[in-house]
Figure 1 (tube, one colour):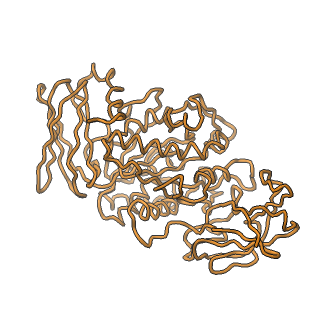
Figure 2 (cartoon, helix red, strand yellow):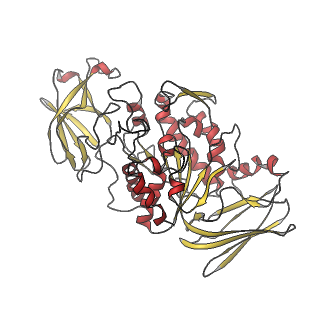
Figure 3 (cartoon, one colour):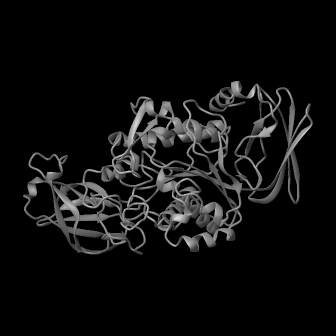
Length: 510
């Protein structure tokens, strides 16, 4: 029996398919594709002549399986038996009445990851640092397959993609190094490549992103409603053109570039977005982003007949940097809101998520502007560490930088204790303390920069100059847009690989 979302997906296409009963697969099935491996079942669907019988046959080196279904209101749909990772397989769909047949070849089973967001996700491999070397590696990973949705908007939920930018393909330098900001994603590709090297079985990467877009455009109306956000036209400042603004309608990318994918069985998703919300509905992002994740999970789960997990893993990149010495651009607040104001992920509000911290990879020499760092390798690698730990349950995989457990006011310093061993250096200006007689800390003028004066196994001490002990309320770390030079923040994991994320923490008395 079809679930509510799956049924509504079929009904939404009724008007468009009744007059177009050409027998075919949906747009995101094709030669070289990856289907979700066992234990989940892959969903297949397409269009045909109402009332016709469709038989789908999967044949591989050792076995053949067949599945039959009926075309209802111009749409056919079936669910395969669970298949272990591997291939290649041949997939044939045949329709009675018209005696039509379609065969797809070189089909693999593996894990499918959806990659979405704005321009830093749309950033291509041809734009990264060491692009020539990266592109030369593409053909060495033929079992990491890529697919990309074309840039389209819609005021109504579409059942199928309006256009495809890159059909399912084996990776090539030409495909991965295509048109800047609108071809295949570097972060998505590097994530999949690293994941393949760990898992040793096929990975399918589905890229659906658009530069300069706010979270509201990627969210369904029901998700926006839960955060008190109305469906409206959004005037968002563009990060490509200084001072320019772009108008977006709420949900137009959800409608055109996510909703059509819901029938697909997936393993998880990764996300790189937030810049467009730095000054638009910024204070709602701690609701709109977690709610979007919840809503995507529910929708994919129901539309795939429960094959995509209801809590599928969701990774995201915490924003890097944009402008030096700017406290008004909203990046520090968005970084915090990306974690639902916890400062780390996963957390109680955002379960089964993982976060790649990127604050220590600024790039003021990027030819694409400082908001688009060329180093996407570190970002992708940190995402993969999170996926290995959270999505795949690998033990002893470190994927989070240090995070404080508490801060205690001593006689003339504050001791900040972390949840793991740290690799720290002394320095000025990375920490600030709130010095406030009325115990409120909303205004920046109540925060004073302080120095790291000592560090140890799992702690740092920061100074408390010119502030009476009774007035010290909180401490914060890296609370500016651009706090560190490249990979030179003061606190990392003990191996020096993972930076501590920005945080704000109440200070208690000894």
